[in-house]
Length: 275
Image 1 (cartoon, helix red, strand yellow):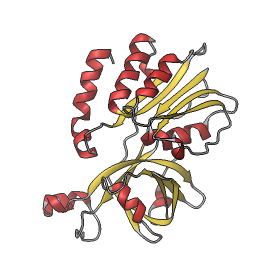
Image 2 (cartoon, one colour):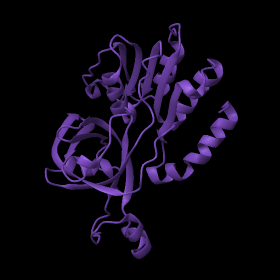
Image 3 (cartoon, helix red, strand yellow):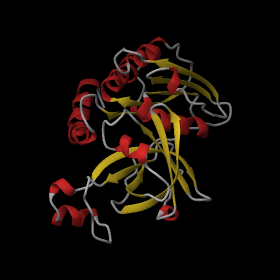
Image 4 (cartoon, helix red, strand yellow):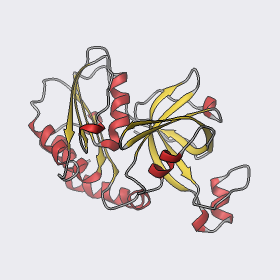
């Protein structure tokens, strides 16, 4: 079950920005309130970053509730959710990776223009998944949006653990070097002009499942996640207790639209497929 944290807004400071691939930018945060955070229990820890609309300024101390009560809606911060790619507590330092598609969206363009010293407001962390040392084997599957969490999970796997990982990206230029102490079979799937997630669904369906107890992490675009949930939950009859599976985003919607409809979507999926 996902961990619920307080809604307090915190502050981090950009220390560096790295272009990982043509469409993935890493923003590293330090300072600010990071020393107060408790991170490390989960590999899918996430934060909700607050982006000010152009021209909007806020009184101090920064308070999201007060802003919503006293300021026009068009000035409210835009909220976007991002996985913590890595947490380095001794600094402390937080890595956040952003998928960037030109000028589209809010967070991607911000990440490409971020520079050391910029302040970042965020809420969290939350989270709910970590590799289970008692599992006989692990399945990791996702698109670019799930890549940071999959990479963090691979790093946290027990030594020698059996892992089957499928990661779908647009093309070979988006491949990253991933490290893991596990015995991981990592397959990169190149989407090209195919629908998002089609290759992931095919790859998981065609997988010869090892014997023993499975723990699965499947995240990304909601439509392919729905298909894989049906396959794992209904056709393979894997208990939900062994699955971390949810749509991070839905094609054709921004995060505001997806978050406002996600509960209804999930309820419909559960009714169709079983909880």
